[in-house]
Length: 272
Length: 210
Image (cartoon, rainbow over all chains, first blue to last red; front, top):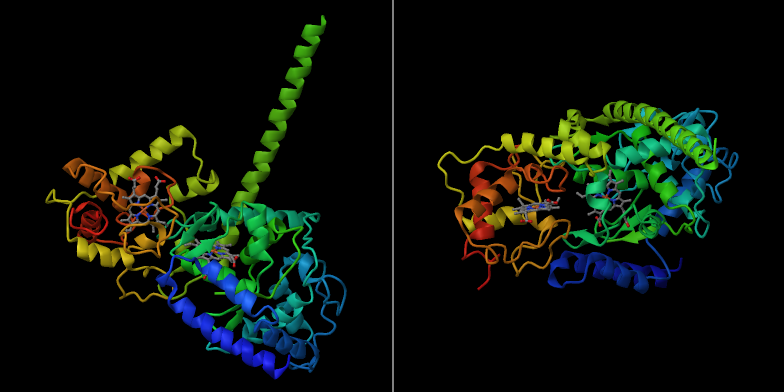
């Protein structure tokens, strides 16, 4: 990326952020606005920086073992990154688990690099305007599936089971507000304040939403992973916090990913 | 045996096998239901005011989850009656508070998330889901528009009572409604609910522009 392009991107982002703050001024929904920003910066996305950071981390020797992640098997064989994300989550023989990208990265960072799991899961998300290693790695890996059709399998009995459990979690109402994912995401053309809500029961909606994550959030100035997206929706759902890369989050991701099958992966995306 | 009888047997055999597979399916379903609950109970943890035990469902939440909000009629009626019985009506028999305080509550989307503090008062979140005052255009659409709510209706006591009841416990009127049970769950106090009733029904409220 050249400096000219970079300056333009920063300018546009400043505009975008001020626009978000005034969201209530016009009746345009947030999605309409973000569509405008997207056109303005069609030649780049600040998530590019996070992808680049992730690529460096992937290739650099790190952790107590001073190993890189280049032997990490994301399902297509050790070291194969291209197209891996479009087939995740999936069942892995070595761990005997269905894993999404972030849970698999966790496995590779602990087994190949020797980093204690707790060191990674203590702060798995970008915070205080600073990226986390695991989420930058995720940005890098997803970028290598751009343009590839989502093809998540439910052939293995464990994959099928994860899908079924994920569907149940989607409809699981609890907490002080009786909310489930379905409260906000199972009716078409609804919104919370000005934020349009995708209806995951409709294929086109589910596809558009899923393939646009992870995403750079203009309002936060950070690239956010899919585990973060789920975490923040559980917060809005008034639930307690889901453990990072837990079976519950992976099953839910499986349900959403399968709903997106057939769509071309388009992330990292850009959001308000 | 004639052709008609044969056909009858064929149909009943088919029916029997359909019933059988449905039962087998439901046995699998039950196993998956149980496993889902087990996983949910294990995979969430306390954060701030949002304690892990929030994932434990009451009878209504469990039923709505199981039936994806489409309850069989009998169960629906039973659950609604049980919710209605638990509504605590104002002891003074007065349902109307101050609509200005109600508007503030309706605007506030705060409350009950792990990023809210215990001492921060919870808001009503009403604008997150409803259109209310004509002036506020950043409104959500999960619930119906409540603009002109009091104008379209005669502001009689029976109506005040029903609005109070809706806000206190919307599930007493529709078991799997997407609206929280603000009184039942202790999110809003009796006085706050009265302020919201006034926001909807007071002729001076911006919800009922002249």
